Length: 222
Image 1 (cartoon, rainbow, N blue to C red):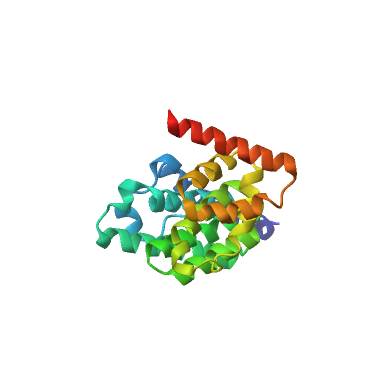
Image 2 (cartoon, rainbow, N blue to C red; image 1 turned 135 degrees about the horizontal axis):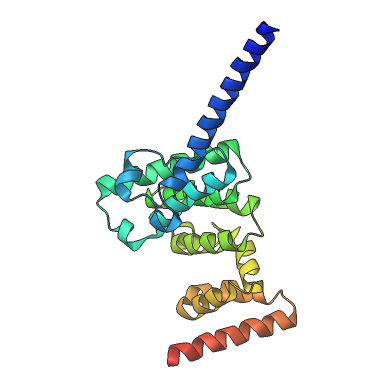
């Protein structure tokens, strides 16, 4: 009986220690700050962002990298900080997609980092995987469209053909149609492509898009 009790105490202590370790790993990304206060460029340049074991903590670390890639302030950082920071973010995203190939947001963050590292092929391939694994995620699709449009001239008219699915999704959504209408007005080479997509939609959706474009035009004239 004493042996069993002693063995039970050892197992309990081991489980307690493991639980404490898991809790510390899981909480570390949250204790460093929320999404709005992501690690500064210096922190990202020193090493990979701390990531817990859960999907939620992974997404938090990815959001920090996404904000660093988008932020005007961070984009103005010297290359000695910017380049290693983006390499670490790409390593983080690739590590997550290696373990979870269906993580569409991780594929997008990897594409954003590749764009900053002037790796257009890597960016395109990751964008494609993001679209394949998250074709109905509107908030991710908005990031993909922004990245694809900025790089379109490099690939030609058919190099980013998978973007058509994202454009259709955003035209049909409440949150994305405004951005598409504004891009229609401000980007002449975008008009033919989006018009071709809108023409395949039901008439009510075509009218809705026309109304959004008209509204965006009125805002420009104010």
